[in-house]
Image 1 (cartoon, rainbow, N blue to C red):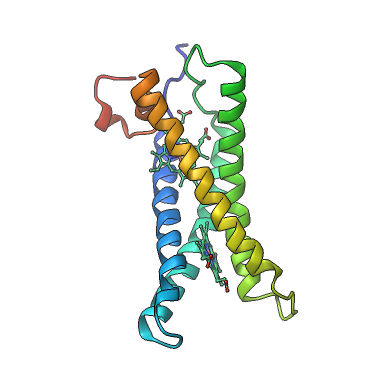
Image 2 (image 1 turned 90 degrees about the vertical axis):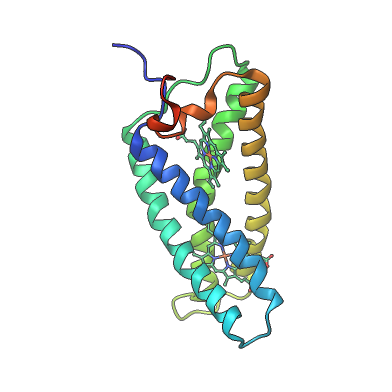
Length: 167
Ligand code: HEM
Ligand code: HEM
């Protein structure tokens, strides 16, 4: 059996759908503050944030469930041990992020009738900054693979029809 060189279609579509939704979460979370309290756009952005954030939680559960049954293709050859550890740790933290961040968001808006104080909101706001840093590192790693190492890593995460000819 030849070794799997790319992610499967479900993993690919879930990755890009969640990535897109996470970007919308940053946009909505950081933009609503520019609108007056009680104004229509602020309310709309907030509602969008809660709805799409909750969708991320559901998709994260589906995605992690799928990933547990479908292994990722092995990392490109020639990566050093620290690079491999960094790649696995980074991916693990990104999975953790898409579970914990929406959970903190849900706790921030409703603590099941209990008052939890400000900590879920503070943790959610701090989480946003940490996730932004993680995503920047993630994209920087992809750029490094694509343009410096030139190992075709990005193609593994793109639908096959966009990368005809490569495996
Ligand atoms: C424009 C932004 C992004 C690009 C270009 C990108 C690109 C990629 C690529 C090429 C891989 C495959 C790595 C490999 O072959 O080993 C990957 C994996 C992954 N990405 Fe992204 N990504 C982006 C945004 C995100 C975001 C926002 C998240 C989640 C918050 C995310 C989470 C992950 C995870 C968890 C994996 C590992 C998948 C696994 O091995 O199970 N990515 N990404
Ligand atoms: C991965 C998913 C999510 C991301 C990346 C995200 C990101 C953000 C960002 C960037 C902010 C602004 C932080 C700041 O002001 O410094 C924010 C605020 C907020 N988010 Fe999310 N969010 C997510 C999911 C959710 C969910 C599911 C909910 C609720 C169900 C939620 C509720 C909130 C609330 C209530 C605030 C305002 C906190 C405050 O009062 O300061 N978020 N989020």
